[in-house]
Amino acid sequence: MKAATMPTDARLLRLLTWLSPAFPVGAFGYSHGLETAIREGAVTDACALTGWIAALLEHGSGWSDAVLARAAWTAVTAEDHAALDEIAELGEAMAPSLERRRETMAQGEAFLTAVAAWHPPQIIRAPYCVALGAAAGAAGIPLQPALIAWLHAFAANLTSVAVRAIPLCQSDAVAVIASLEAVILRTAARATASTLDDLGSGAILSDIAAMRHETLEGRLFIS
Image 1 (cartoon, rainbow, N blue to C red):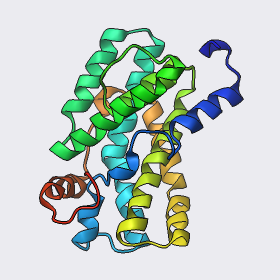
Image 2: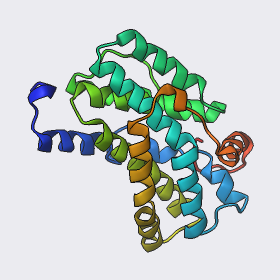
Image 3: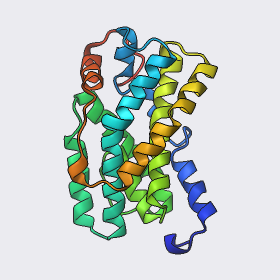
Image 4: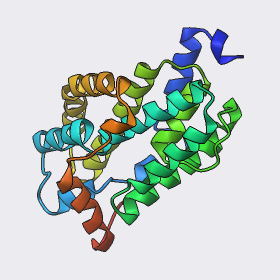
């Protein structure tokens, strides 16, 4: 089925499949530096977790990833394969630490392998956000819903990390996701209108936590 004629329900179903926790990208194994923040006492409850994730979504890696996903989506819809390759290189170069680079590149590779059944754009290696944006563009999935789903999956995975590492009870975890809805919608709307000139991260504590995770003893997560 061509993307141009694929019904809206089919596009939604495809997006839900790609960003389901069951999709084989291994997201459950990465904490994005959150494990360090939990271990060092910076994130100890639902309130602190909400603030941590919200900062990433609006000012940190969540925002940058959404901008990169938007750029990849645009490049694919314009059939600009050279631009897509450049966006992938830029996304990899923006990783602030070894583990964060491993996190985005390993998941990107796994995503591209798994999504091959849907005939995605011809890109072999890319950060996870770029791979998702490119695949969504190739499938004709509208940009803003794709970004909303991406940011929700990002927030949900970090919440899952907290459930295991704080530990956080399930009811508190659901409350965190609910409280982030407005932030996710707002960030997706901003990213939909963004360009690569809007790239940038101000979540310095998260970047430092990701770097410190490399020497954290008794780690549960890869990053």
